[in-house]
Image (cartoon, rainbow, N blue to C red; front, side, top):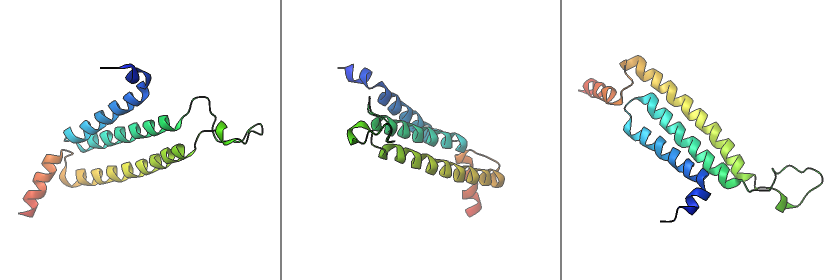
Length: 125
């Protein structure tokens, strides 16, 4: 097995490891706050990966300075724009999830998803 590419692209490997940590946290935790944290870890790993893919060594940010107008001198601004947009959406989704978690806690006095679903099933019967 050749690990040369893994060591050369260690940033991408770290991003993938963070994604797996967040995904396993999202699947295995029963606490709603811990699930939200796992989703935020997943989001952050995706933003890290996009930022890494958008960066090119030796090129500058797409701001015209010193009269250099050649397209080859600058990086593509699309990945940075996608990351910024994703961060805004992620903060909004996190706020909604936290507010719903507060409402669930106020009603059921628990953050354990299994206990909440059991209480909902008892209410339905």
